[in-house]
Length: 98
Image 1 (cartoon, helix red, strand yellow):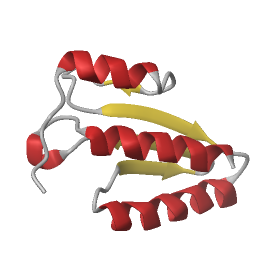
Image 2: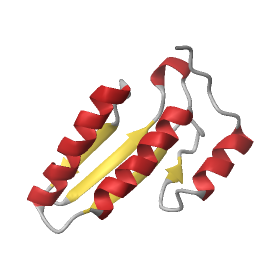
Image 3: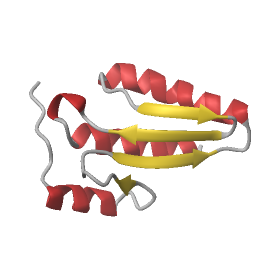
């Protein structure tokens, strides 16, 4: 399936539904820091996201330190943002709320 990068107006529209996510300076990625109660909760979140990433064939760039998980989403094969990034971000938010 061919993926197309979203235009900046589409990105702004999609970001409005994800208020805690930030657009990178080059508008090619979105980022968010998730904070959990402890390492176990952070690792559980990462495990759920890893299973989703495999299913979607779309993998986040992320970093974990203790109870923090820093996430960057972009679609590397288009050097920008696609629907996949925003779909994954929304699902990550739901996983973090549970």
